[in-house]
Image (cartoon, rainbow, N blue to C red; front, side, top):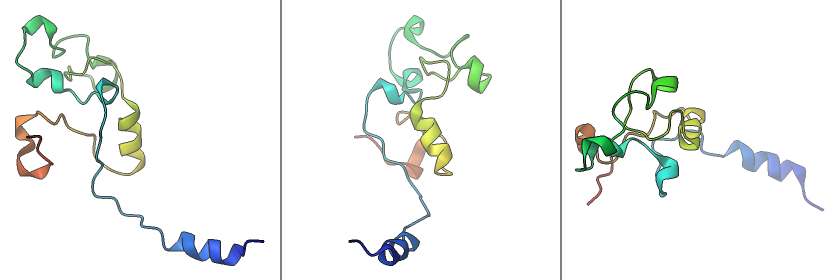
Length: 97
């Protein structure tokens, strides 16, 4: 039989501060990279109606709403995940090489 007191003590030691969210996935976790890929303008998502419903401006996301990752980031009190190819990411984010 488990000791419930030990389980409660272990729960008090959980880390509660998050500083980053690492994402490994595909287009399901669409952060808006479409704007930064060298392709034909008609294949981009930086014009109406993309993103209008949730963000009120075109986002470069093929979806018109939030991804599951956006909800996870919000729950963890983290900002929305920026597109990894976004030039303004600079040194503040892990760079893809």
